Length: 325
Ligand SMILES: Nc1ncnc2c1ncn2[C@@H]1O[C@H](COP(=O)(O)OP(=O)(O)OP(=O)(O)O)[C@@H](O)[C@H]1O
Ligand code: SF4
Ligand SMILES: [Mg+2]
Image 1 (cartoon, helix red, strand yellow):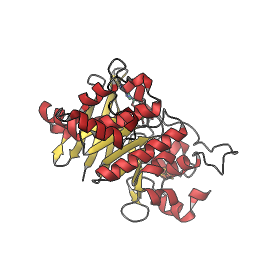
Image 2 (image 1 turned 60 degrees about the horizontal axis):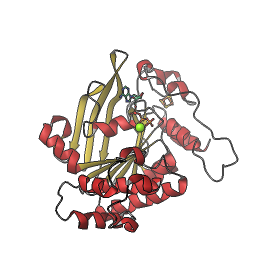
Image 3 (image 1 turned 135 degrees about the vertical axis):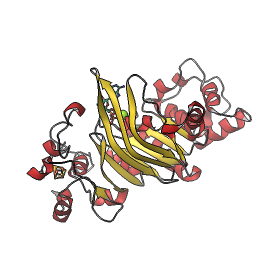
Image 4 (image 1 turned 120 degrees about the vertical axis):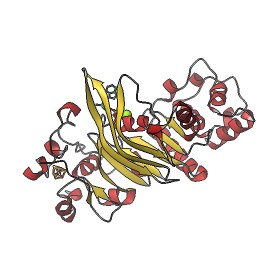
């Protein structure tokens, strides 16, 4: 297994008190697999991504419980040397906005070189990597600065920097959100190709279910700091197992529905400081019954052990085929 997160809890200091925003999260990624982590803005996706290499800013927040296993090491127990090694060569990140991730005062070449843990044969490795991310046009050009590249090319540079240390795990946090749709698709194709060629394990974080379905092998749906559904991409896309996932699917723009108003999920996600006691989706759920408000549901099987959902009504709902309603 490339990554196994168990019972992760993260709190931020908000208005003088610790508010938990990741509330006991389990997630795993097999070697060579792309896992999509999807949910509305503010549900805690980036916090999970940052926690994996303990990048939650100190003083702003802390990891309060859980295990984050990378191979046989628990990141949460590593000392400074071990953590440095993980951040340098085991886990790489690509974030949403490539321009603000690149340093405007250094050349692209210098920044690529800086990302290499071992600078021997740097030119050869940089050329090979630029070729593999579709930037052969700038190979050998050591004078080019980030602002001279388009947004899509900048994101390719970020991906080149991320894969150069040959990491076991690549975390992409909304990597295409700042790009236009054609470029988005090109970047997704690139990530899919690199994943296969380099046998990379990938955590792909996005609020956009369309993008997540396109790239992932398995999908984890997150709501209010916890996973509410997980399963193979094809199972979830054909037969979603949680009313929240159905809501996300209904609000997806599609060609057939381009003239219709999107069916956005009603209401807003609850504040972490005021979460309801039972199912956290209860106030917005079309299928709620009184029992849903009593306690937070555990994971129920939707269709085989690999497809599970945090909804007490999932058996009735799945039978009724509500995803078509
Ligand atoms: N440094 C911080 N200090 C205090 N609260 C924070 C901090 N970072 C995030 N939060 C809060 O934690 C919650 C989860 O934030 P996070 O950025 O992980 O969500 P997200 O799912 O990545 O959202 P988005 O889709 O908008 O990127 C939000 O309520 C956010 O306001
Ligand atoms: S447990 Fe109840 S409120 Fe929660 S998602 Fe299922 S039906 Fe809706
Ligand atoms: Mg985020």
